[in-house]
Length: 117
Length: 113
Image (cartoon, rainbow over all chains, first blue to last red):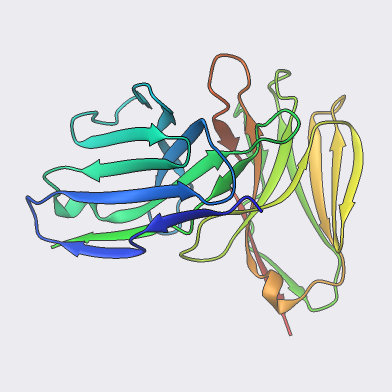
């Protein structure tokens, strides 16, 4: 149980275009999902917290208009990188909060590798 | 003082060794404790999730929590080359932070055959 999927797993896009990444909780409902980015050999950096049916909460320094997050259902959150530039190339990972006692554990997706050319 | 301290390693051990991974924390509000394993270019995988002092065992893995000392450990018995990965301790912010995780820096483990 507690499986989170991401799609696509790898995407290459041209500078100036937009890319959408999907994050799905496959066997549980997730009222809260998180989006992270990770550069090689570095730790996970939280970008935003996404709650179903409400606006995402962005971490300091993350551009809301550039990284659009939508959490339209209890099993789906999307991250859209708008007007992508080469510096946006990174590994993007989503996670979903679990439903066990306390419910604070997070289950991560496999990640999406974005390359902007 | 950092909120969470974790030895970044790298840590190299021979196959079959017992591995000890450790984190110390300073925030008394941390009430839940997690260990994740992350392989290169993959999302982290939840290994252990606990919320009380003491030990929790799952197969070759044992998580140990000492709330009074603000210290958590993960022990791996009979380590295998497939255990080679980065291990992250993590603590959820449960008061007004939506449960976002505070991670340790990660310990890179290599198990040599």
